[in-house]
Image (cartoon, rainbow over all chains, first blue to last red; front, side, top):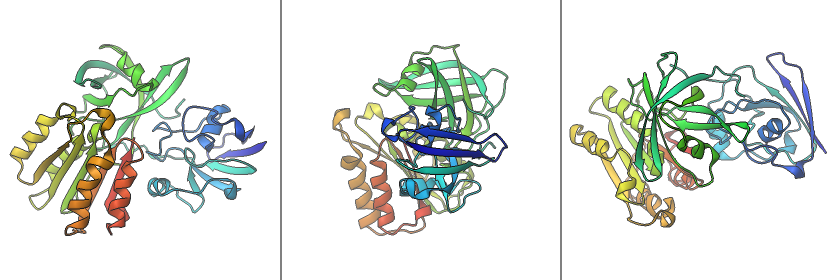
Length: 117
Length: 240
């Protein structure tokens, strides 16, 4: 079993999702086995305005531990992350970062960009 | 469920664009006008199979068409989101959040914009090019390369042609191969054209490319242009 620890900058209580990676996908949005897929499949909400297709940054998460347990970024994810508010070196898109083992801790930023004009 | 503000709109009109593509004209129930940047999308919350699907559809409206706004989409075989929308009728209600997205053109800065569209991927370019043509001077050139299997698959075809006739600094290049949809591919149509005209021939590094299309083949175009020396930020793309 793998564990995903989720903390929220908006003050919501921390959640821990324990899951069997071999059972992915858990939901229908995001890459199978991605952080987005894992969270949605276990009842933890994560914004994903584009439906989990790497077309926005609303599923931006900050990895605080266990980066090595996630698949590496592809160029497409990096291109999109460029536009994420509050970008840090351990930022990932929840819809793209696939977790196959171990324990990972993430933080959900308070803000996403809704570029209304 | 999204934690962002959710809006409700009425389907005011549905237009059949091609055999598998429709435009839905929506009006917010509270009279809210939709402010958006050209290229942005709305995120629809669709009740399908007992749960809520999140599906993004690009705004096709021209800047200024905020009261009754348009989305244009094709029906995807087996796609629950598009199938749900294609079963809707005029006067039905839809819920959405947004607008969202960073694949936008707001204030033009470059001398030459190349828009590369694959089938229904042309939709975000309608407001983008309209914005470009109305806000930039004659020093700005806009070109639209638009690939589709058949002439009848070219969305907004008359509009592109009309703009080309009216604006000396806009050119429209349809790339139609006359094949069946299943024989069509970006590799066969757009890649050779882009390679010939923007890679092998003189490269103008002031160009800005916007690419939009369906599937991972869009990334071939990105890699082709970046591999030819165009800067990363000069090659923007959206893959559906």
